[in-house]
Length: 222
Image (tube, rainbow, N blue to C red; front, side, top):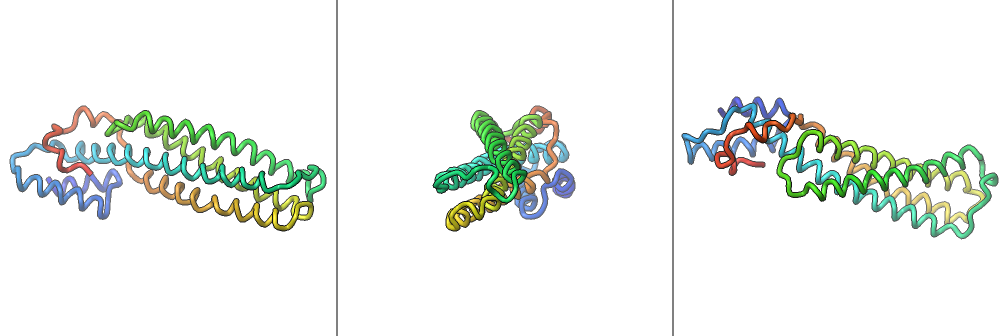
């Protein structure tokens, strides 16, 4: 049972210390209840993947929302710091100015909508132990869109500072770039969390109904 479960856990992407902790708890459970029926190892591993993917999707959604909040603060700070807005044609390139404007306006709006919808969905589903694969997929896609839009917004802020470097006070340009840079680590950390969570193979969600009885698995949940 243990070796079969080890293989199945690896097949769904659960490896390393997490897998060893699960196997240790299963071993301890079987030692105290030798006749316990844990069900098919493949279904049991699929259930662990379900629950891990669900918890990861929720926590990554909140991390994404937090990172976007920092980006929003950076956008407000840079806009507040500008004493006067220069004419769009006074910068080094009208094309660069247009790109910066599009990046900031569109990026900020998309980030706000995707991030807010993802956070609201995660909050609504906060009591669920295991979500359907479609629900997890929606959260992951919204997180990806929100993070990409947040990065686009930061890029637009930097492009704006570069384009009007000679038109704005030096301290404003430097502050704009510095504040935009503050938003990069949170976005990068949230994106890395998304990539790490994506390694778990998420089943169809049918395992919730067909898995072994909950009483025999309660101690083995991650």
